[in-house]
Image (cartoon, rainbow, N blue to C red):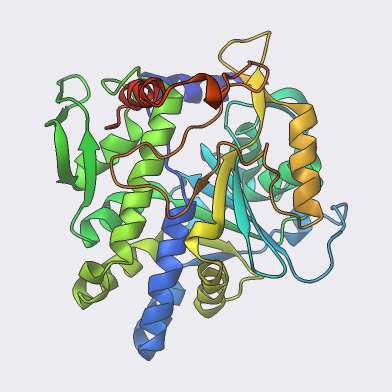
Length: 398
């Protein structure tokens, strides 16, 4: 890892920051986009379409790509969260690197449109990064690289190529959500409901939240999903679960009557959301994006599952992880063959509609190399106490 990236990592660790989960926000955005277009708002449609950044990375990805295995039309979408800049500078970062992406989800939509699942790819996983091409030259392959270096050094194309190289899964579409506009999205819908297990009064990070259920927006909302210090045990896992809970609550509010019947809120949210999107040129326009969103919506949120790629601790560095090779190979084979998740792979899955605001978003598995206790060995009281303790550790209400 270069000094430049190491310094960048150190700065971000010092601020205790992490970017946000993107998928539920994308689903909510496409649902509302569809509704607005359905109202015949042609002028507004053009405005929203001009907000979105479209980028062709065909040459950078190259021809050496996985074949499509499954018959029919399954769709695999790579979703990335980024802090890239706006305008021409942001476009250069998407093409050539220089921005950070701490959130990556590989989504699979079945050819029969009966199921879908998203697999989170942790940024700190140690991987084999392939050689990548950018407009400015070649990014050499690296053994033992952190997963998020692909985006930092080679932008979207290198991330797509890295994921395809590691999984053997062909990426059909990609989406980058720029979370610099996150506050605008939250404010546009009047804030988001959360539940904080205990009062937060942290002058260092300027975080002041009362205990219990409350609605937050603006900088407080951004800090809630980014700051690690002061919440629970201060871990990245806790922050990730808090982010998932927040995004689920936000998506629920976006599709609620309180937003859909308020044209002013709907317009502001869509404007902020589309200004934060970059898409592959294969999507084409906002109508195609809305159609893609409808494909997921037609499945039903209850039939969309989310898991984290099976992982284990990286022995040389306790701050890093690696994919569990045996289980992750099984996972990618199922995705390539357009098959649903097995019971084992989905044991800790959460559905897109399952999370309530402020509750635990998911019980992400502990490292797969560690044994887990059998559910039958626990009483209901013990299970409830364990869930409450984990929620508290993650900065959530039980």
